[in-house]
Amino acid sequence: MTTPARTRVAPSPTGDPHVGTAYMALFDKAWSRKTGGQFVLRIEDTDRNRLVEGSEQQIYDSLRWLGLDADESPEVGGPHAPYKQSERLDTYRPFVEKLIADGHAYYCWCSGERLAQMRAEQQASKQADTGYDRLCLGMTREQRAELPGFSETPVVRMLIPDDLPLSFHDLIRGEVKAPRPDDQVILKADGFPTYHLAVVVDDHLMGITTVVRGEEWISSTPKHLLLYKWLGWQMPDFAHMPLLRNTDKSKISKRKNPAARLLWFREQGYLPEALRNFLQLLAYPPADGEQEVSSFDDFVDGFDWAKVSTVGPIFDVKKLDWLNGVYIRSLPADQLADRIVSYGLESGQWSQIPEGGRELVRAATPLISERLVTLAEALPKLQFFFTPDDQLVINPVAVSKLKDHAAEVLAAAEQTLRQLDDWTTAAIHEALNTALVDGMALKPKFAFAPVRVAITGEQVSPPLFESMEILGKDSSLARIARLKDEL
Ligand code: GLU
Image 1: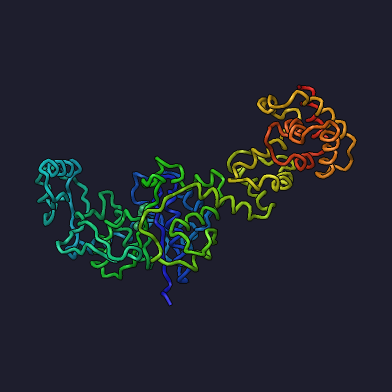
Image 2: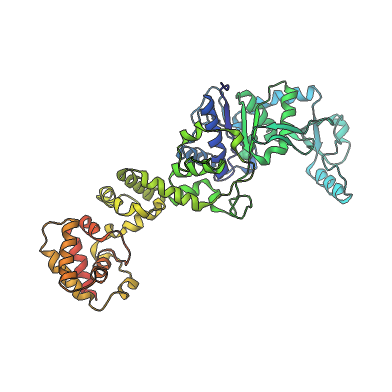
């Protein structure tokens, strides 16, 4: 039996959440579930210049939307609260003091200008060693103040030893090598810890056993392992996930691909369960005989780090479209209708639910669900139900495609339907068939096209007779009469 894993996702609230955050959270949650442990959400907000207002709330909301909410977080609390680094500043300081006292870290008073100048000189002389030159190492404040490029507020740097191990074990990759690090700053001049210190201290204090994060952090891991060693703490396991890639194999970024934004999926009308399934498929393709459509529980059951590929998975939205359709059609019609209504309100397609709107959407959803790819497409397809008869927009292209006898067809349709008492799909169909196909010797295609344009304003629409039943007799007749008069 594996020991219960405590995992965490640790996003920085620097903009609207990246789809990668959800990808990490999926693995965190799956591994914690598989082992009977817990999944923690920690907000890493020590980089004060990059904070974006509202971003933190978006992280909570979008993970909850995806069903990837954490067991412990700033929102729900937990035994290791606070879970936001800016509220833990007092926590880090004693560890910095200890590292300094033990000779593992030192103050550095070099000003930004001096560091820039040092870097420029290193570059000009094509020096192989481009890290911090350790000017301040071993100096007191007074000694350093005598020299140029002195700043009143020092930072604290790690003293990286020469014999630092540069390889480590990764759950996905096996043995991994990383480049030699610089004397990393761990405490900034503003008194805030850098990511590197805070991540180690918090992962330790929060009892994290498995660190799941993007492969861009591989190069930082030797520094982190060194901090664990210096502080005498047990090291967690590491799983560095491959970065998601665009179909052209480039790294997925919010600048180049709208789908890099987690909120995009919700805005576009994807179902959270479809997106989650899609992210599951990115981890590793299903083995022979395994289903592509699989629940989170299935994913947890079959979860195995060894199966995760190290090649960046391609983020192909076409696959997601397909999955979304599968999930849409697996929902009971009323549930789908309610999601369509919620989406309409959330996206601004509707400012409020029109009178009788929910019932109408429930009645009409079965007419459109077969071809629906996203929730966003639903209300526009159903718009004609909600428009007053005299305001229905009749697409001129649809009108121009009608044959010359369209007005006569509409007159005959109006006449037969006016006498129809049994306003049901089957009866409407039969009445129109008798009057137009039999009575006027028209092919069904030509017989019904004018009626369709009159009722829906378009050449292509949800099934016509069903739509007329839902719309009701009065509206249907009013629309037929209106187009007849306009032709
Ligand atoms: N705050 C880091 C990020 O947003 C977390 C990296 C990690 O998981 O260690 O990428």
